[in-house]
Amino acid sequence: QVQLVESGGGLVQAGGSLRLSCAASGRTFSVYRMGWFRQAPGKEREFVAAINWSSGVTYYADSVKGRFTISRDNAKNTVYLQMNSLKPEDTAVYYCAARLRPAGLVREYGSYDYWGQGTQVTVSS
Image (cartoon, rainbow, N blue to C red; front, side):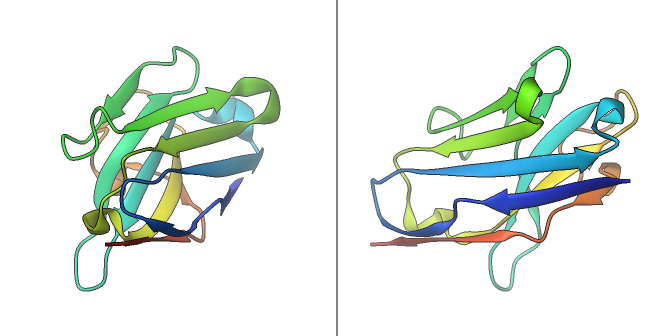
């Protein structure tokens, strides 16, 4: 089992920044990849970014590339999502996810094994 707890969400004006954190506990030595997804009201959950835990290889959705940065602190078992130049369309609940098995589809939420409870991000215009 892996437990994930997100923090750092809030209300910010367009153009502002936020940093989300996701603290992992439990079988963290088994984690292969960590990801961030988001879900806006009435929309499907969508991929935002991911990072392979050991190699540090990162992946981004086109909609956030150049604005968001995913990183991890292995010693703290924590993954971060630095979000800059935020737009109203970034408003959503942001979820952290963990995948235990190697490879897999990076952008598919069904390929992740554990999920956090989510943190709300609201960007006002």
